[in-house]
Image (cartoon, rainbow, N blue to C red; front, side):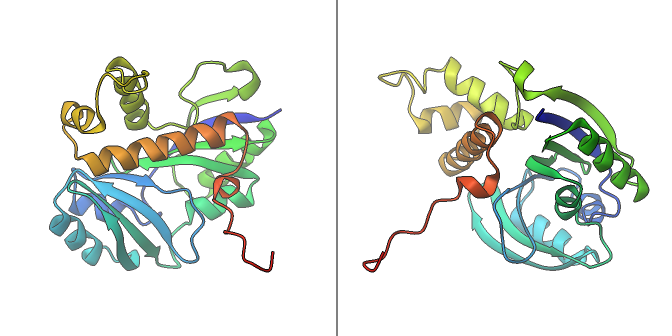
Length: 224
């Protein structure tokens, strides 16, 4: 039976600790798309110059590239040094799928889907073996969860709730995206990106598909 485990682990040893020590106010959310190298991380809650200074100083980070960005939130492709624990690969090796990952205060908070509860135990043990101080926040079967935050970070959940409360999803809409962004004190682009990631998290969790399966298919060529 498919289950979701909400797990918190230490940022020490995963490449995050130095970055958060340099930029204490930083928030981090992982983009769960498949990339050829490194990991795509949304970094926010600090000036871009301060974030990039922290990226430069973190010895656990070999390379980084700014892929996209808004006024308050930037997407970086980050490559960690081989000595760090690759959280995403480790979960995959132990039979789990990361639906969502964030690090609001330097510790990773992961929403992981597993096919068997024994897989959750294996993931917990793997993190413990690497001294990442794992803590299971919640473990539940998806069939028993009809109204949940499954797959959503707290920020994504709060944004969707605000969108509902302000009539963003009403027909016709009671509030525009810009008005909702102003209410949440974020930029239009930051809100758009946050809603997109929230929709993606809900799809991967509620429809029981992997993040890879939600990637758009290539456009057919004339020869197809």
